[in-house]
Length: 445
Image (cartoon, rainbow, N blue to C red):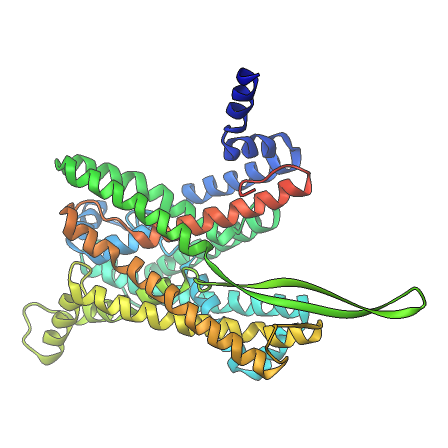
């Protein structure tokens, strides 16, 4: 009897994740979705290896060794910038356009009216986002090529308003739009959010080379072990804050006609308000803003000139260097501000108080309508402090980890870990929903 109980307990100890993956693989349509998603990611990695014409690879490698800013940008492009690939911009111009549209939609009455037209309105907003992606991609590709040309990466190219420059800019913009198209195909026919998975695939593809370089160049076994432990600790904290939420109790009351008379029925549920409802958007926004002044200043930096502009440009590039403390202090400040700003903008667009009142729901002890909205605003501001400080600390952890471990060749990007963990959890939830529809137990059961 005891042996049979032990056998059953051993069987129940089988990892739920492995069992769920086996269940998903047995379902033909889910297997097709998984294979389609993996195939699109493989195509993305092939495109990331196609360079733009006229690149001096040796000068490109030296430029990355000398400028920490380029290495930081390359981590988000999944190694495509190190090859100066047509996919060097990744899907970040599209993300920037999406953020701009989310901010402009409640501020511009015409856009707000379009967004409230259901599925048609969402398609129109998505179309505007695609249009806005093109000029943003042109500007970002111009900035990257200008920065690299000053490092001698494009020796045979007379950078300006000419055909070779137009060809390079067009190829990089086309690469971005192709990746956006791949991401939308994954969302439509595959599994998970396609744009997020493109970012996830780029970061995962870059990590092995970064880790391998750190292991080869550093002989500090103790520091590397400490770095690994800190990495696991950061992942644990990221998962905890990503899943953390404040559950606001909500009651529903309705009248139904039963037995020849009206009866009052009621039910209770909760409204989940996430501590980190802004996700990774404030980090991307903050890093984009902090990188912009240094990038512009690098155009005017002349070590042989003693003019005011040259001195100011040298001051900006030296101060806003990722290896200096002022850079990370500014990042922390911007992340906290953008977390509050983005959370409140998105929260106001949801109109939760109006939706509750329209569906007969109310928060116990709070009057429907404006008092409910004010109460929810107070709650979201209070819990957003936790999310804002969490994101700010996540953003600046690489600086302090590098100082503690003294492993300069291996930078632990907690921002990349946040993106990877968030995308992985979101994909697992979607696969779990697909499994539960087919009477299987999911990953997070």
